[in-house]
Image 1 (cartoon, rainbow, N blue to C red):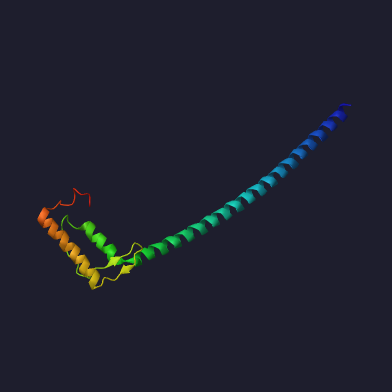
Image 2 (image 1 turned 180 degrees about the horizontal axis):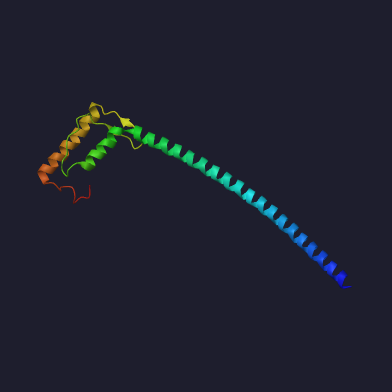
Length: 141
């Protein structure tokens, strides 16, 4: 009877070891499939993010090109104004141009030029008559 118990014990231990091995193999296969699926998902996410990054860089490059092409002379004038000394106003050497809020150039004809010169002359005369801060009390500026 002891031999029978020993044989049954060995068979039971072998069967349980085989069952545990089978379960471990199934878990390893399922974990490998999960790891493979996770890797594929990460790869797709990375490709999508790279696509978005490339598209955004193209848009930023196009926008920068449009800003640079808008009016390079105005940009340079801003740079010069930032580097200029305080009170160092210089008259422009080129013709005066006006711009709409959208950035389109308004051609200044003789009539507009005369009105601008008249307004500047009137302001100059008022400043000469009443001093530099003549309109500050009225809240005009």
